[in-house]
Length: 436
Image (cartoon, rainbow, N blue to C red):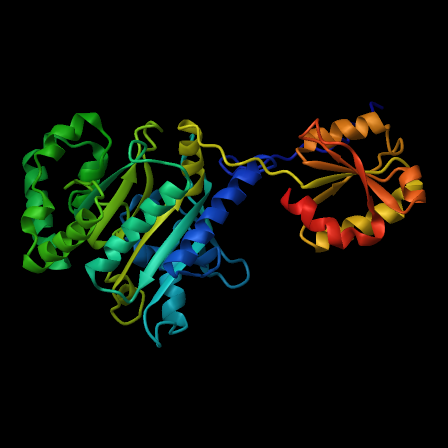
């Protein structure tokens, strides 16, 4: 009888859902540190919501005829109770649901932010994945154009903190007005596209009467002429909507922020009104939008709460890191302060105790670890110490330990002499290793 191959099949990550391993993960940590610092400067508090929400939340919040709801959501039935659930495809609806459910704005408006994993079932490509990560920022309960401008300038501040300049990204701005103005524009759009129905593709014909605004977002080159000729929403804006847009513009002008009014900018969700904006780059091909958002004053009411003004934006982390690569921005290398060299097992106890004292004092220490073949030669340990990027090596040699000392060697300054330090006073000389 032939022997069966019982070796298990190697498991792989789901297509479009990526592992993030060292050293790449260090770039993510650097990015996230920049974000946390920015949020603290602007007074935004962190909020965290579940990855899984009721499917109805996104149908009601995003709109039934958006690409996300129609094509891209990971939805399933809960085997325990039959509930329809969805892996969140965007962050805003879940945050608004949480605010309504917990009456979180009872004591007044809130500024919040979140770092979230999102899921969309679409064709994976560079900068667009099925699991992706986003920084989400929301100002809840604020109606004035000053907060719209604040959020746009927050984006600018973060982009600059990351090392980007005005040549790397540009700002586009538009207003979607209010529901009555959009209804009038909608009727004009339908009439325009009906008059040119022979130029529309199948997708545009399907959306003609359900959501004609989405037709303006088409990427079909054969439809660009008819889209360019379509009525513009800005022509239908009333006095209040125009005043709101002009106030945002005035705030941006006051700080010298350049922008372009793009009358075709509509964003991908149905909940937006008034201000919408995108930060765009030409350095990533078709994946040009690196940050976008706008005002959504009707979403709280749509989701069962009281009408509450709000504005927010989202920034894709994967796409931002791609842009930083494209322009040559690299975060500083992460390396320990000290690499601990342990020549033999007899030194292990003292080495562990000393390293713990140093770590407690804020020194980052990478201690050499034994393999199945022992501790390895001093030469091999020094090679590992050098490769680690550490500034110093602590050598727990037998002669030094007998004297109650440890040897300190500078790894980045060949002219610095090797010297010995008293083990009993490790806490006292820790600051030297941390700050050198």
